[in-house]
Image 1: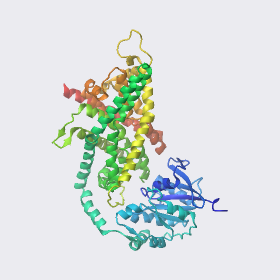
Image 2 (image 1 turned 120 degrees about the vertical axis):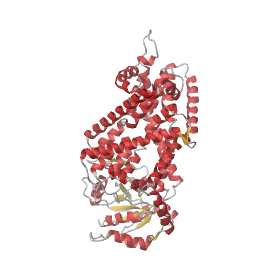
Image 3 (image 1 turned 180 degrees about the vertical axis):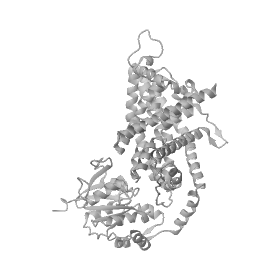
Image 4 (image 1 turned 90 degrees about the vertical axis):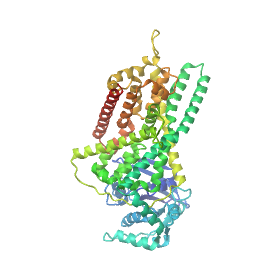
Length: 610
């Protein structure tokens, strides 16, 4: 068989966060497909690429794993595929083990464990650019000789950063001698690092000096609180000029398009009252979302987040969790869906289920437009103690309320399941590093793309549907009041109002809650559309500030702290737990908490205002 006709089946393996998926994307480009493994909900990614000789490669990106002694669903898949034990999957011809060059102490142990299999292997030393920037010197030849396998430097995020790996795979690969189980992997890793890796002493000294503060049980927690507080201050303070510019631009464009469509009233209403009022009402919050993720990405790149997880481990243990739940819960600040999927790395099944059930209580970015609208309408834009922005303080308080609620629910779950066991958190803390601007920019671009796709997809679609339901049928000839009162949406809103009246919601809010089940931020665009079709020409913020009571606004804020998640999140919970029972439990307890919190907030606010 010629080189051009032969085909090799490759498997990418490695610890989580080693850059394995970025390397997969670099190798396969757009020639990849995503599905689930047969019988399980874990995602499988497979792609293909060609070598310089014309040889074809099939590449499988296996889930991240810390060990082949599987303790999580992800590790079970990786172990079984590598061994050739997974039904319908043959063992790979070559295993490409990816290791973070900046954290070899942790990653080489897994490489040695995979070497026990005795299969052809190549080690990809990834993130070599970051290692050089930090002064880490790796003697590749010595490491290659010690491991008994080819070692190739890669930079997965740089164009052409995997060229050497492709060339090495395209040639003849030597056999790898299997280790005996009796070997001491930790001792061998220490020996390899001492012989082939030079770590800058100054880096370790700086890390230790910073950790004395960051990991201090009191100073560390205080620093974490300050960081989170400053983040939410910036969300309001920095975003204001950008939001005003977007709002002005959307208003100008809407007026111009509306004037051009003056001879077609139905189309004019759809475009101006539906699309521009609805979609524009959500698009204006893009700066706040990006500023929030700017800080989250910077903290992640700097190496601070694993330390925050370690720091919070004792607190979370009291709630029946460990610090390992911190990363999935932090991911839920972006969206509960990736947060729930990230729980696959949690080894204990009960801890994993608890983390899934409380993930929607983290304040996801879809809630931010609702919070920003109500805070800007009812909370004065003034400073506190001459330093802090009052609106930012309120936003910080809402995020804290979500976190405290999640821990409280986790504590109740711990009592119900009578779990008195303690699960130790073992975690390798990476060295501190200055976040690379390019990596931050890529992350922000991805977040902006996701948001804009939602705006142009589901939000636009639901806005058009709501416009139709709010515009038809036409009111009777002798009808009085806005036409929307006689529409399908108006009738539905009045029906739901009987349920939500005790918590202070008007019928317009009731309408907005329905499409908000598809995506929480749609509630803002729905309100904008409903009020525009009601004949209100003022901006949504001005309408809310003048037509709603403070009690209603506070009640809606309380609702969205606990609000039942979007349908996509429920579908993810079903997929990850394979249980409709857990879906109904989650939806039921969140709805009950949201209604009770809103009821108490509304009634107390009314009593105080009288």
